Amino acid sequence: MSEPYESAPDLIVLHTMRCIGYATEDRLAAASGLGVAETTRLLAGLGDNGLASETPGPFGGWALTEEGRLTTRRMLDEELAASGARDQVQTCYESFLTLNPLLLDVSTDWQMVRVGASHIVNDHRDSDYDAKVLDRLIKIDDRAQRICAELSGGLTRFGSYSPRLTTALERALAGDHAFVTDSLESYHNVWFQLHQDLLVTLGISREDERGSE
Image (cartoon, rainbow, N blue to C red; front, top):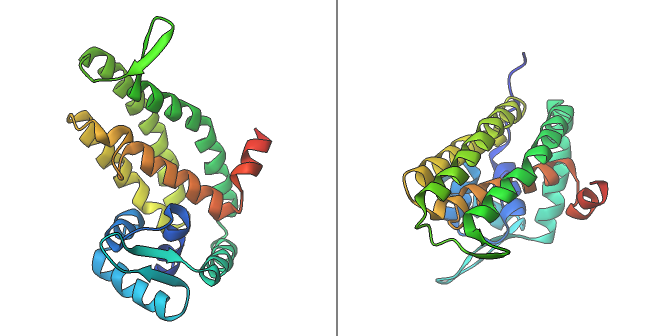
């Protein structure tokens, strides 16, 4: 088995911005799996090269420029060609799609509870109900971890998803309800980023994905 392809740090930061959109340095560091200091250094260089722009202030953050989006696309295509991992990523994407409806159902059932013919907001007072939903999430995570391992075995930049999903699940099981769907690092939000990552990496739009379903 060949070694995973080492993704370029600047591509990791650019691609993370492409996947999560406008974000602070801390948020980009957490989502990319890079340290804050390294992320800050890389963002400065990307800003100097016109690939990213920063909005200062208390609600400030970083975003890709149009040149940054084009450069990210080119670098992703070059990475897939050099790594030979396109088929591997495609297979993992197809496996991910089989799990995606299950995760969306879990997220909905975590947030809402059926009462008769209606749904009401889950106040998390019914611990038995929550435990059953979390048990479904545990089963999904077991399969998701295998997908993450396969992805990171092809491209190292996918390596951040497994520990982030694990942390979110552990926090949820420990009683922190926000880590199922509501926190920035909730299981659902990390899952959403992984979905976006797979789409962007393979050059598939969400419209194309919906059309193929």
